[in-house]
Length: 95
Image 1 (cartoon, rainbow, N blue to C red):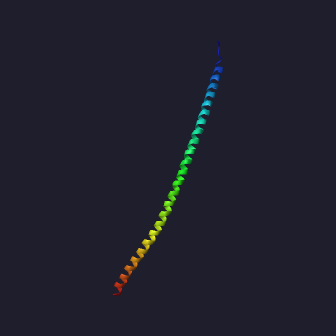
Image 2 (cartoon, rainbow, N blue to C red):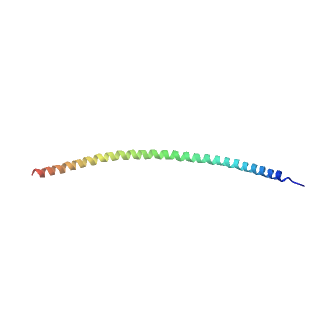
């Protein structure tokens, strides 16, 4: 019984090639499913971050409003104090 070595190697290589092709197909299908899950997770995280951004925008606008309000109050008080001290200095210069 004589076996042709070229034919034997050809059969082995074709068999290994078919097995490799099947493994690659299975892995690509699992990879596609995994990518779909990751995509859903990313969409969920993005949706939640957009909600949090709305809260941060509200806090930022409220802080800006309060800052402007406090600046006006501090400016008014410092203006009154400046006028009071300027009057005392003017009275001291007049004497």
